[in-house]
Length: 234
Image (cartoon, rainbow, N blue to C red; front, side, top):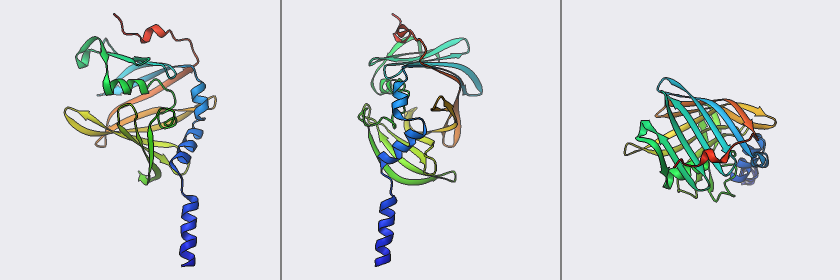
C-alpha cells in the first residue's frame, strides 16, 4: 500500500496539464509574445499538388488580414481575409471571379491571419483545449491535444513530442464530396528566424496518402504591405 501511494504521487507530480504542454510548445517556437509583436509577414513558397509545383505567395497583417496567391496554369487562385470579411477567386472550383466567402470557410480564412497558431493563443481567441493523454506517432511519443474552435465548432487534434515539445502533426475532419474525411498535416524542417521558428514544410495526407505539400522558401517579417490588396475587387 505504501509503495502504491508513492507510485501514485510520482505519476501525479509529473503529469502535465494542457496549459503546461502548450506553453512549452510555444516557448520552443520563440514564445507567443514574440509572434504577436510581428506586424506583417510575406512568405514565398511552392505548393505541390497532383504532380505540379505551383508558386505561392502569402501576405499577412498579423491578426487582421491574410491573402494567399497561387499561380496555376496561367490562372490566379486567391484566398483573402480582412476584418471579418473574406473572398476567393478560383477558376478550378467554379469561382472565376472574386466571390464572397462566409460561414465556416470564412472562419478558416480568419485563422490564417494570425502568425501564432490557434493552439498557442487559444485562450485569447476563445477556443477550448483538452489534453487527451499520450499517443505514439511513428515511434515518437506525443501529447495529444484537442482544440475546439470558438468560431465554427470544428476540432483539430495536435500531436506534440513529449521529448522536445515539437509539433509532429495535426489532424482535422473535413467535408469532401459529401463525406467526412480526416486530413493530417505533418510538420518538418523547423527553421529559426531571429529567435522565432517556423516549420518550412507542411505535408497534408489523407488515408496515409500525400495530397499536397507546401514548402516555404523565404519568410520576411515587418515588411510594408498595402492593406488594399486584401479587399475584394468590385
